[in-house]
Amino acid sequence: MENIRNFCIIAHIDHGKSTLADRLLEFTGTVSPKDLQAQVLDDMDLERERGITIKSHAINMDYVYNNKEYSLNLIDTPGHVDFSYEVSRSIAACEGALLIVDATQGIQAQTISNLYLAIESDLEIIPVMNKMDLANAMPEEVEEQIIELIGCDVDDIIRASGKTGEGVEEILSNIIDKVPHPVGDSKAPLQGLVFDSVYNSFRGIIVYFKVVNGEIRKGDKVKFFATEKEYSADEIGVLKLKQDPRKVLKTGDVGYIISGIKTSKEVKVGDTITHVERPCDGIIDGFEEVKPMVFAGIYPIDAEDYEDLRASMEKLHLNDASLTWEPESSVALGFGFRCGFLGLLHMEIIQERLDREFNMNVITTVPNVSYKVKTKKGELMDVHNPSGLPDMAIIDVIEEPYIKAQIITKSDYIGQVMNLCLDKRGILQNQNYLSANRVELNFEMPLAEIVFDFYDKLKSISKGYASFDYYQTEYRAAKLIRLEILLNGEKVDALSTLIHFDNAYTFGKRMCEKLKDLIPRQQFDIAIQAAIGAKIISRETVKAVRKDVTAKCYGGDITRKRKLLEKQKKGKKRMKQIGNVEVPQKAFLAVLKLD
Image 1 (cartoon, rainbow, N blue to C red):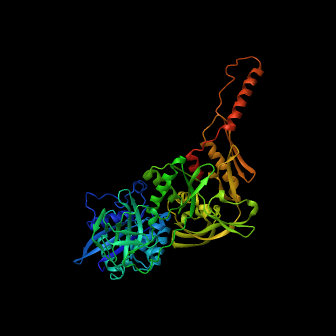
Image 2: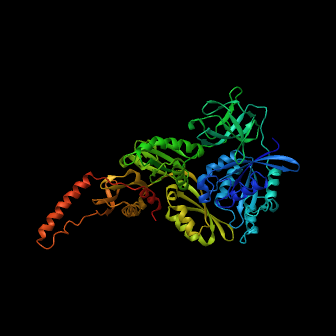
Image 3: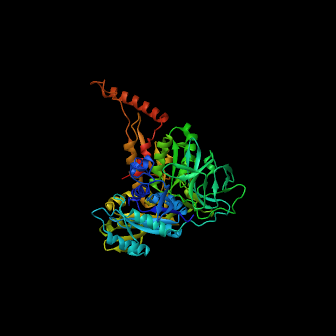
């Protein structure tokens, strides 16, 4: 156990975590030169295309230091705020963390957020300044920021480069010298913490876990605490680039277990594995339930695919524990699921993964947050979608979630960033200068205002320099109303939104204009209306595709033409009564990008 080190890599987006992980794997000989490629741990096509880490990846490395062989378990974590649950799970399985800061950009919001997660879990922090090979690196300035943030000495900060391999040996020696080895009782009953799982269509569910106490051998009878179901450990092993089977896993090891589990409900992240014959006393603490921030409906395009979608969601949930979902039905779209996500990027990734990994074509409704509604009778209810809102006449107060937003930007862009936040109903709490040209702004804002396009706008006005992090604080009363979209007088509940009274008119107008461009023309006129209750606040009309019935009337009396037009008008009227309007999938997505 004294020769085991478990550590993770935490940083802001694009500060070079995955590239540095490549160098560590290369230096320790874990990956052979022929298998080496850029971002070797990002094994999902989606991660490679977007250049971001979506999933945490665990891998075991063997390294000889001072004539002693050490087993190092590395977990590479995502940097985006939408995948912070992945980071918190990885931290629970580690004793140390590499804090990586880009030498050209300095400390950013998500760096601070992930650092606090690590400090709360009492992890040993090793600061690393990456990208030292770049001409625009500012090591002295960034060193000052790191010292101010974690209170270390200048000598503690390792200067490294994921591209050239500078500082990699120093990082490995620091991990061995500074990160404590796992603490546990090898003689105690088995206690293993489940921190991830993945579905394999041939072998069932593969569970990743860390042995906290005791040991596990191949063929042992084990059970999971949460479900109390019993299994046989058909195969256990450690995670190299591919799975590496072993006979035994001891205290402090991080590995996997395959036991032929077929149903996804039987595995829960944060659960504890123990022996059937000699069970441990209780479950391992330290896992918090995920709190979804954004809710949206996911529906199959073809109603017959509902059961396939359910199976796909269950398999996806195994691999992404931050996704929450429950069945719901909609008048316009039939049966589907109400899903909770950690943010808009998370929602987009889930939709893309459903398409790529499970061939599921789905429609996603307008995302919204959850509200608390107090009725005049004093009842309190949670509302996750606008169609679940009771009649306005019986509502006393609607409360919306507020967040504390932390924005770090260059001082040149303070004015534009403040304007953006104030437009989104933000309240400035304080601002402090981290250095001569970097400032931290703290705002209180409604969560609903940042769901749509806030992050994109922030990046564009600050030329990509501003970084953003947030956490939910409380619920506050707000003047909210339900905005309905009607097509030919019929409500499309998938497009209805709960919105602040002041923004309702402009939002409704923009939505109608956008839908006019996207809904294909029919044989009859389509009226697109935005309504608050019974009051119509905006209208656009998609004109009918018309045949020129008067073309064959050349000259003659006007009544001949009128007769033909009247005949056509009657046909169009009848068609309008029986015709229905198909709303294309891109119309649902375009609502998110109204600008």
